[in-house]
Length: 259
Length: 365
Image (cartoon, rainbow over all chains, first blue to last red; front, side, top):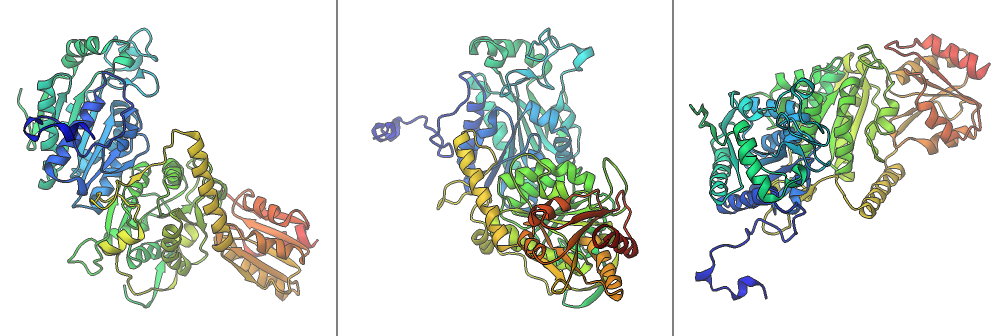
């Protein structure tokens, strides 16, 4: 007997999405991946597209996303998810195709695939988790690592002369005519979770319009990599990440949002 | 395209065979000497319902070979018939994708028109990617099924055969050729179009494919990742069993004048064509020379070479490389007879006369 068997239907206000599997997630406590996964699952369930959805997971912490989301999945080589998704969608135009990548995968090793999939205007949903660090390999510098931020490969802080600047890849992609919807969200508070879910839903629904890429960046914390408690990490993210990566829509319905 | 006799380039034959064999997709990046593959597909526009050669096949020029091989991965992992083509430097870029394709057991077809290397090298024909093609190229214990056509007709026909092998074994198939066969024009019998698979056929032939999970099954996952080493070992054993079955059932070769031969050329692709002429010249001089032409380079016709080694006096491996296939020939023959290499490389094709001279000097003596 599960919890659901003893809860009266009228009292049920929340339950696990049917598009999530029973597998226990491997993510660290405080990580944003679990919440982002759940939102993707809820959106797929609410849109009723589980039987038409194909996901592409990256190399990085979310490499095993296919263990948690109960949809057909392909695991791509490092950085190549947008190329993989391009062909899935072109050969199966009735499918809903999404990529799920971290900052190293999408904005370092896979920059060419990212830019060209966006520039071709592939009718896919791209989800980008930006936590400014390489989590899986042990906390090295990411293209989005902030100036001065300490990582395993910038032990004295990211130095612009040595490492260049934090890469605002999302702003760059919004400039391309092939992107139709570009937004930056977070999942660190209930209000932000609701906004992020609405953004993801729009990004999936947009595939029906055949107008190009819908791109959702989720600025996320990596408290393990940042060597903080989850609470400290969320506060640090608000104070340091959001000024560099401001939340909100960047491009809607093919038009850049005026600030 | 209907069944007829046409004059065409080898590269064009590959493209026309893809359309005629019911391919669902081609993803490529231009590189000499095989760019006519994509150029022909773009001119034929099989995706266009208003075109003369409409099949519904998707053709896309990617931003790089990295992208094109990963597009092959994505498309083929939905259980569709997807192909790409490139030449040596491009294949090196694809090496990552090839090992992922093999590791995730994704059937697909890749054509490599070899050119002289290393590095950017030359654009002229070479056979110096034998090791890369048959011994790996990417990392890990994997094998591609490697076919070596020696004529435009074989370029055309092997595309049809490649799909059968690829889906039978869930393994990438490499058609290994060079610019000589890719660029030369020869007569070629085309075939009637095989229709692309229907939705039902796709699902029957590739039940593992990712096209959206119906309620009737669990989710399909295409991956080459296994975090548990004990399970990875079991998976690798399964791959090895698959390769062993290929060795048992799928070896192809051509034996010319081998029955009465004292001496044998072992050669494939373009250099086998040269050896055919050298063999004629030898026979005219009264020398009993035959040719064993491996058609599959992996699996290699080792048994056939071992059999020949019991009754001939020597073999000359003729390759447009510094000597790569000769290692497999020597292993097969277990050094029971003299086996020597003759090769020109860096884009040079040997003449029949110099090949015969090498046979006389190195083997017949």
